[in-house]
Image 1 (spheres, one colour):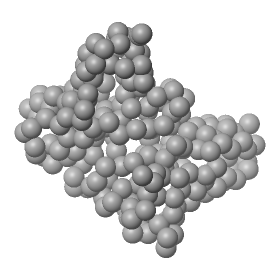
Image 2 (cartoon, each protein chain N blue to C red):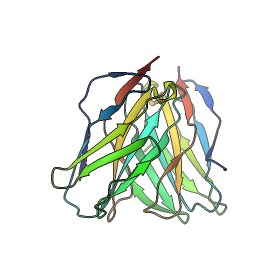
Image 3 (cartoon, rainbow over the protein chains, first blue to last red):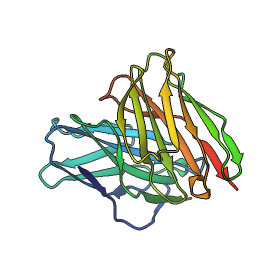
Length: 115
Length: 112
């Protein structure tokens, strides 16, 4: 079984500032993938970034970066230089390498970028 | 780049009717997933197919069935619709079972 937990309330950030979203992922598996998906008001689910559990180096995609702490089961997303288009619900998700191939999502964090 | 295509984008049905949702994966992707997202909820996994065979099954009601065809497109058939089936239904696709899942725009189903 896998459990994804996101517990922060709605977050507001000024344009060009930095915001960090927290997520914890609990699984008995050693091999797994972690993802952050973004869901803007259009409701489209957009893949933001991916992290393999076996990699020690944290993933980075342009203004988005993660801080993966395997022992602490922590997987946070940092959005740098926030832009108005970053306003969205952000979902953390896990995928086990063995066994089922379903994404397990957290409850999501709403991010609002203020001009 | 080509994305996942879902049709229809919006669907309104009455209780006890049937609905069919279609999904066309990204070209060369061989794995298709279906998720249901209720209002204010996170997506919940329903079912997936790899190379036209069911690969995983989640909390999909017995009233629902799905399959993947020889051209890799997939259809989700929903019968005896209930008010609680109103939701956004996403299809996602990937290349193999362990790759990133790319989501389509979703089908918004409203049951009245």
